[in-house]
Length: 178
Ligand SMILES: CC(C)(COP(=O)(O)OP(=O)(O)OC[C@H]1O[C@@H](n2cnc3c(N)ncnc32)[C@H](O)[C@@H]1OP(=O)(O)O)[C@@H](O)C(=O)NCCC(=O)NCCS
Image (cartoon, rainbow, N blue to C red; front, side, top):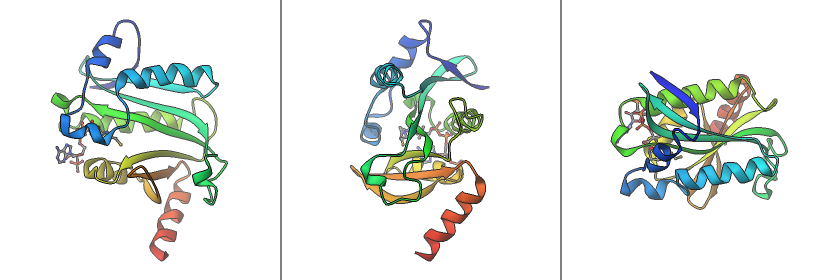
């Protein structure tokens, strides 16, 4: 059984010890320790942030974190979603020895369900970046309905999933026409 649990004094060491494979380090700009520190800073700055430990049958096997923010970075200035409230996936990993067992997919699904309850407020979409070379991540996100926006920063593609399914479908057809 997959569960998302808050980071506490009981699991913080286990979560920090989880690492991706050596050849996957380039896929992520961060690590679990840094992300937990970022969560502290973001929350202090008024950006609601939730870091979660991913558990499989009671064992901490991964980490994910999302924030509730506004899409106001200048690189999004010309986009239809500029200025919209979003949930943004900051970090997502499964420890190397636990990968490929279906845990990541189930945890991601649970996280999207959690976001779907709009825990910090209404939002238009869920956003994330993935390295363009990260084929596994791309496939996983596409399977959940994420669509590339075409915005690339530091070799990472921006993708979004509208929380209103109709907008996701509309954005797909716009991309097809383009
Ligand atoms: C991305 C990641 C979280 C996926 O977690 P996971 O538990 O390994 O994924 P799952 O076992 O649920 O598999 C998800 C899909 O990826 C595929 N997959 C997973 N590992 C794979 C591998 N080594 N080779 C090929 N396909 C793989 C699975 O077959 C599955 O596809 P399917 O649904 O079509 O069968 C994990 O690989 C990871 O931590 N990678 C390094 C960090 C990273 O890239 N994070 C994302 C940053 S954007």
